[in-house]
Amino acid sequence: MSPTTTPDRNLALELVRVTEAAAMAGGRWVGFGEKNLADGAAVEAMRAMISTVQMRGTVVIGEGEKDDAPMLYNGEEVGDGAGPECDVAVDPIDGTTLTAKGMPNAVSVLAVADRGSMYDPSAVFYMDKLVTGPEAADVVDIRLPVAENVRRVAKAKGSDVEDVTVVMLDRPRHEALAREVRDAGARIQFISDGDVAGAITAARSDSGVDLLLGIGGTPEGIITACAIKCLGGIIQGRLAPVDDDERQRAIDAGHDLDAVLTTDDLVRTDNCFFVATGITDGSLLRGVRYRGGGAVTHSLVMRSRSGTIRTIEGHHRLTKVEQYSALG
Ligand code: VTB
Ligand code: MG
Ligand code: MG
Image (cartoon, rainbow, N blue to C red; front, side, top):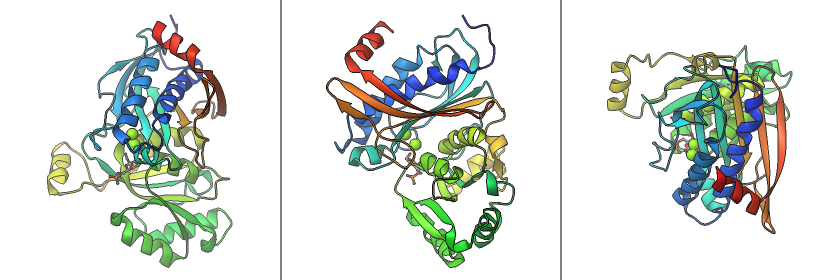
């Protein structure tokens, strides 16, 4: 039994098995046009593997609700029940449509932090987000006009607005936002899904993407905040209710809809972990490669305390993995 009461460094490498297992299971469904079956396979693999991780975890973010997809339930106890108490955020597949269509950038994601530290995302499904890396973290403000943020990012990076690339979800709701970005002189990279991976590329300095803007899922915002705590940079979010009903419910639950939620509001600790495994090839990670009874996975493992970022290539022999899973 672990003597620690808070999640420690050993957890990082344990957690990667969980997203590896989910990616290998979900990856079997790449291109089959069945996003819920892909998600279901990833959820089941994640649930089986997470039960072997030494922690007393509670799922506080079990994405799936919004898309009516299979999920790990909020409040579900996960882990072997012996280790430190943790909040757990899962997205067994961020990019189920990407998976179903065999398109790039589908990932399996898991974030863990001290118990009670993660923001409760249940009031409002969507969040307006701004994410950028360490260079511009202190100068951006989601309340400013887009052009001003673009100018500030360019200046902080010693470049011109024409050099700035903004990543955003390709959605009709972003038509005006896209126009503002173009009018500011910056370039846009549209993504069809997966704003966690998009946010990480915006935060990493060598990615060719400088800023993520626009409205995506609130759960993904909290998972992104865990990644940002490890990588440096910032996420700023504002809850974005879809209609008056949702707005009223959020206000009744005590939310201030004008408040800017920062990285520290979304994860109220400096002790968190973020792991992701590629399902399909992407700018962040390679997807799962299957061959001859085996699979190769590519994962990112990060810990906020140390700021260590590891990329891990896992070579798996599937018969052995299956035996291991059967044994628990
Ligand atoms: C994003 C994206 C997800 O949902 O959060 C997005 O990261 C936002 O919602 O992969 P809509 O798709 O409804 O616009 C996903 O696309 C799916 O969870
Ligand atoms: Mg998602
Ligand atoms: Mg998902």
